[in-house]
Structures are given as structure tokens and as C-alpha cells.
Image (cartoon, rainbow, N blue to C red; front, side, top):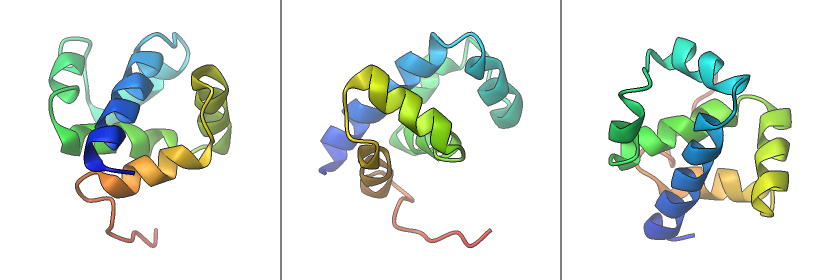
Length: 92
């Protein structure tokens, strides 16, 4: 997946997250984001990576988004790896 494709994927995931009344408050609480800052997230590839990092924390979230988007659940990891910081390994 190219970085451009990954950004497009992450933008769709952010739009889905913004429309999810149950999950959006969890994201905002864990990231310190606000409704006003969501637009800024959409403009920064690093921030889009953090959106995918958040969703990747729970397999159910990944599967829910993939079902909504009609994409392969593994695409989320592929997109994350193509965005800045995605090639770093976190062992926590």
C-alpha cells in the first residue's frame, strides 16, 4: 500500500470513527482530541497513523470498520505500516 492510499484509507477510518457515537468519545478521551481538532487530524499523516493505532487496539473495532468499508481487515495494518511511524515496532 502506498502512503497516498494509506492516507485515503485512514481518512475514511477517521470519518467512520467521527460518526460512531460509542467509539468517538473513547478515542477523544484516550487521545486528548476534541471535536474541533478532528479536522486537523485529517491533514497530518502522523495523526492519521494515530487514528489507525487507536483502532488497531481492538480486533472488534478493526472488524467493524472493515465490514463498514468493505475492505480486508488486514488493510488497516497495511495502511498503518505505510504511514509515518508505521514501520516502528512497539513491544508494549
